[in-house]
Length: 212
Image (cartoon, rainbow, N blue to C red; front, side):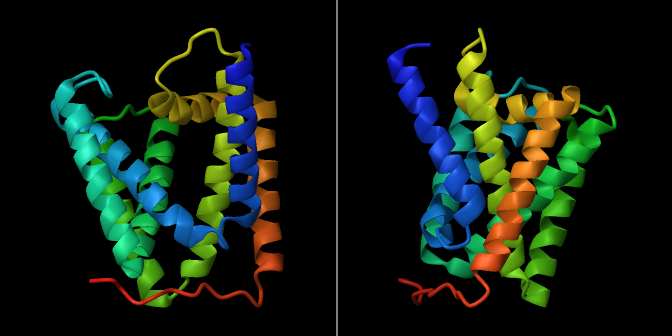
């Protein structure tokens, strides 16, 4: 491992731990970043599901992913409720697609469609019943635990694949094939959720009015 890679892994680990255990307090800062990552991934996966392309295998998937990422990031920055709905939809989509793939289905049109339906349903439920805080806590804890697991796996992997694609693949592969990685992921996420709930009981996000 090179010194540069070691520094990058340490930084990623620190960010992952901070996100898992303090994501709710950081949410307004993280929101545009989540918006970009979610839009980028969704755009690329949509191209994969609709046209049977490998993820990021074509220029079109990159362009669609980047455009969706930029649009989602900008809207998340300026409109808080849109950002919350987007964050909730990302959580719903990710869980639904992970469940479909755990059942042995690849990222085809049916899996993508189930993910989209779950995303819309999750966003609706979160806004309708005003449970944003707990969805944010759960989502940031899961994301932080995923960053920690992916960083360690990426550091020691002989294949340095594209990090945007590898992060999701690394976590999914690790937790589905290794009891210990699954345990680490679950413990980290669970500890993050518990810590955030306990430490933010009297904390309320101060959301500024929309800039437009």
